[in-house]
Image 1: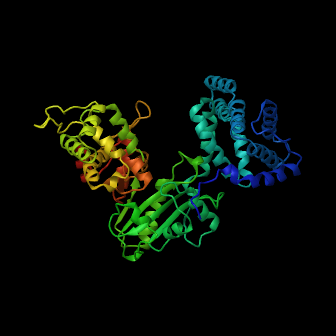
Image 2: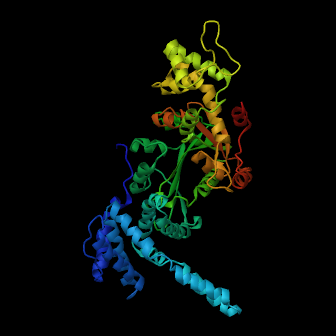
Image 3: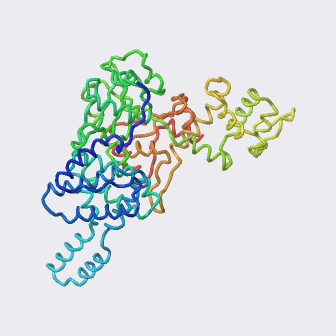
Amino acid sequence: MTEQTAPSFFERLKNLTTLWRDYSSARGEALPPLKPDLPEDDVAKVRHQMQACLEGRGGDVSARARAAELGRAFLSLDDAGRERFLRVMAGEFDTDHDAVTACCDQLAKADTVEARDRAEQALRAKLEAPRVNLLTQFNALPDGVKFLVDMRAQLLPLARKSYDLKGLEGDLKGLLMSWFDVGFLELKRLTWSSPAVVLEKIIAYEAVHTIHGWDDLKNRLDSDRRLYAFFHPRMKNEPLIFVEVALVNGMAGHIQPLLDTDAPVVDPASADAAIFYSINNAQRGLDGISFGNFLIKRVVQELSHEFPNLKTFATLSPIPGFRKWLDGVLAEGEPGLLTASERKVLTAAYKQRVGEAAAAMAGAEAGEGPAEGEAANGNGDVVAGGGKGSLKALLARPEWHKDPVVEQALRGPLLRLGARYLAQEKRVKKEGDTPRALDPVAHFHLSNGARVERVNWLGDTSGKGLKQSCGMMVNYLYKLNEIEKNHEQYKGQGKVVTSSAVRSMAKE
C-alpha cells in the first residue's frame, strides 16, 4: 500500500447524498439541482430551504427530510458555492440585534423579580441565532455530526479571513464543544485486529510520521507498541485524536530506530519507559476543542496498570517551528546570537569545506566583520567573523548531517539555540494575555503539565525533520506528581518548566 493523503470528508460522504436524497424525496422536500458555484438564483433556493427548516412544519420526520435536503445541497457544491452557502447562513440567520436591544431595554425597566425573570428569559431566547437551530437539525441525520465537524473544518480558514463568518464558526464550535465533552468519549486501544476501516483512517490521518503502508502500521501495533484513540458514539469509525507509544528501556532520543520495521521487538514487560512518539488530531473541525490532555492522562493510567515496571512517561516530539524562527532571527541580524567560540568553529568548518574565498564572501553577504573585541589573525583571516553567514551556508549544504566536520560545528550552536527557543521564546495574542510558548507542540505539552526535559541532536534525520528543526527533537517528560503544578504555572504565568540541563544549555 502506498502513502496516502486523507481524502476530504465531502469526497468520502458522497454516498450520503443518495441516503439523504431518499430522506427528502420521500417527504416531497427535494430541491431542484443547484449549480456547483451557487449563483444568485440558486442562493434564493437555499435561503428558502433554510427558512423552511426553521418553520418546523410537520413532525420530526419532515424536519429531518428538510435538513437532509439542505445538507445534500451543501455536499453538491464546490468550494466557492459552499462559501456562499455559509455566508447566507451566517448573515441572514444571525441574531436579531434590534430584538436583543429591545429585550435589554425591558430588562433595564424591570422593577419586580417576576418582570426581571421574564425579561431575562426573553433576552436569552433572542440571543441565540436562528442558524444554531439550523445546525442542530443535522445532528439527527446519519453521519450528521461528522458532517458538521467537517463543515467547521471548511469554515475555519474562511472565518480567519472574514469577520462576517466568525459568529457562525463560534456557534458551531459551541455546539461541538457540548457534544464532544470528554465524558462522552471512549478510549480504545487499536490493534492489528481492529476494523480495517479504522486502521485505514489511522494511516490516512497520521501527520507526524507518515505511515508507509500496512507493514509500517503493523510494526506500530506490535507487542512492544501501543496505539490508543478517542472515539465519539456518533462517529464510531472515526478516531478523534490518537497517540502512538513505544515501550522501551531508557528515554528514546532518536525517532528512526522507533520507526524501523526491522528493529528487534522489546519484551514490553521489561520496558521501563513509555515514549509517546506521535500524537495526531484527526479531525480538523475539532480544532480548539481540546481533549489531548485527557488522552495522555488516560493512556498513562492504562499503561501503568498493564506494565507496573514503567517509570518514565515522556514524548519524543518534533520542534516544528524552530527552523522558521531561526531563519527569522538570522534575517534580522540579532546581535550576539552566536558566541565568539561558536562563530570561530562555524567559520573554520566553512573554510575547510568551501574554501577561504567563499568563507569571506559568506561573511560579507551577512554583513559581518570581526566581532567586537576581535581582530584578524596574523594571516589576515577573520577568526570569528562571518559566523551567521557560515551557519546559514553550512545548513544549506545537502546532507550536512552526514559530514562529520559540518555536523560537529553545528551541533553546539543549534542545541543551544534549540534550548533557548523552547525555554524562552514566547508569543502573546493580545495585550494582557499570558505568554505562551512559541512552538505549537511545546504549547500543547506544557499546557498538559509536561516539562521540557532534553533536546536531542539529530533525533530526526528525515527530510521533514531536517527542514523543520535541523534534525533536532525534544523529550517532554510527564512526571506524574508534577503534572498539575506544571500545568498551573504555565497556564497562569506562562512559565515554561524545564530540566536543569535544558536551562543551563539555554543560558550559555
